[in-house]
Length: 358
Image (cartoon, rainbow, N blue to C red):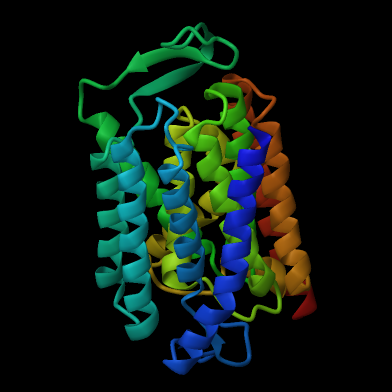
C-alpha cells in the first residue's frame, strides 16, 4: 500500500518537474507571458504563463495510468466521478490557455469555471449530507468518530446547487489568491496533503481519494520548484483555477470534508469575501484588480516576498492540521479564530504601512 502511494506521488512530482521547463519554453516561444504593465504586478520582467498546463497534464497522466492498473477501483469513487474530474480539469486548462494567450474579459473567462463546476456536479460529485456540528451522533454509515447528526439532502436540488457553488467558490478563491510567487501552489499542496491524511481515516485502504490527493500534491510540488520566489514561470489562469477546483472536489469525495477545506483555505476565502464586499460597497466591479488583498497588504507593510508567502503557508498549515484533531463543533470555533487572525493580520499590516508612509 505504501509503495503505491510513493509511486503515485513520485511519478506526478517527476513528470511535473520535467514538463514545466518545456512548457516554459513554449510560453516564451509564443509570447504567452505576464508583462509587468499593471500597478498590482510585482515582477519587473515578463514571466511565462501556462504553468498550470504542466501541473494538470502531469496530474491527468498519472491518474490515467493509476486507473489503468486498477488503483482507482476502491468501490467508493465511481468511474463517472473520475471522468468528471478529468473533463473539468481539461475545461479549465483550455480556458486558462485562452485567457493567458488572449486576456479574455472577466465575463468570457467566467464561463470555464462555471462549465467545470457543472461537469463535476453532473458526474456525481455532489454533497448529499450535511451535519449539525453541535449535536453528537453517528453518521449515515455508522461511523461516529468525527460524524454528527446528518440531514439527507439527496431528494432536493439544494445538494447539487450547494456543491456547484462550493466548487465555483473554491475556484475563485485560488484565482484571486494567485498574486505572489508560489502562494497558490504551496497552499494547494498543503490542502491536498491534509485531505490525504483525512482520507486515511475515512476511506478504504489505498482509496482512490488518497491517491488523487497524492497525485495532486506531487504535481504541484514538482511545479513549485520553478514557481517559488523568484518565480521562473506562473501558474496562469488555468493552474490557479484548477487548484481550487481540485480542492473543492476532493473535499466532497473525501467524505464531505468541507470544514477541513475551509480551515486550510479559510484565510484566502475570508480575503476574497472581504475584497468582493469592499468593491461592491465602493461601487466597483468585483473583478476590479487592486493591491488590497491580504497578501499585498503584508508585502506593502515591509515583509519580504518569501516571508509573506511562508507566513500564509504557516497559517494554512496550522489550521489544516488542527482540523485533523477537532470535532465538528470545535471546527466552527476554529473558523471563528481564523477570522480573528485575518483581522489582526490585516489591521497590523495597514498600521505598519501607514507608519512607514507618514
